Amino acid sequence: MAVLEYLWAHGEFDAKGVYSALGTTRRISHNTIQSTLERLFKKKLLARQKISHAYIYKTLVDRDELMSRMIDDVVKTISKNNTDGMLAAFVDIAARVDDAHLDRLEQLISEYRANRDIESS
Image 1 (cartoon, rainbow, N blue to C red):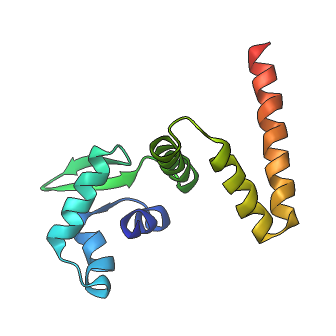
Image 2: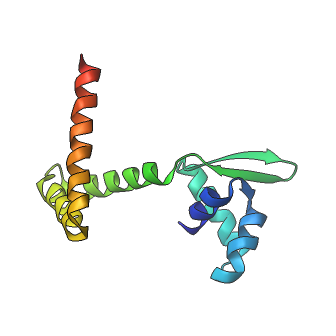
């Protein structure tokens, strides 16, 4: 996540640049940064382009899309197609923050339904 956060905030970088920014403060090696970038590339979260002797990496997904993918993976793994508990958890989370989050959840549901109706027409 730290690598993705860095690339979201600063744009395209090679492993050396990411290491310079994160490696020392997080006490991780250059090889760890390189392998992290490689894994993120294989998961299709990053794109890369070879320039000279180094790959330059950039993000392919924004934070919201990544969050959506991660939640989808967790739900599929845990729910076994029984999503009632997951839906209740989302409502609980929204309610614990404040009523504005519950209102936002209702708004998102309404928007989704409206868009779905338009697409099916």
